Image 1 (tube, rainbow, N blue to C red):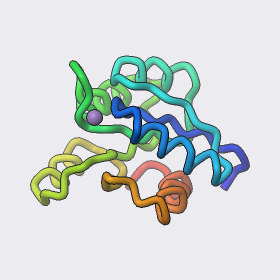
Image 2: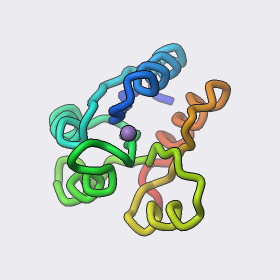
Image 3: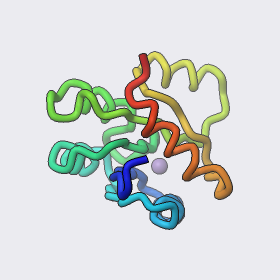
Image 4: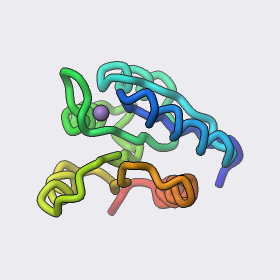
Length: 128
Ligand code: MN
């Protein structure tokens, strides 16, 4: 990976946000953080991160609506966005696929594989 690749974490749960940030920074990523969809969109437009990790359940605007906003904006349309979700239901995963996420990652975060998985999503870019 590019050294210091920038990953934006959009997550309203403080504990999850800190864990994701710590794991990514330890692995050499730079991180940006937002605790709402609205802030996440603004940060993505301004900073153009290599990847966005998007929680689904967020206050007011959810992660699926945030994805639509990112894809609808020329500044952020090409940034890969991965859903960060506690849902294990197949129907939910199909909903994330249909919404256009480039992948999903399971919560609770697996500390052993998280950074490597993020690196893989960075390398892959936008799903075909
Ligand atoms: Mn949440």
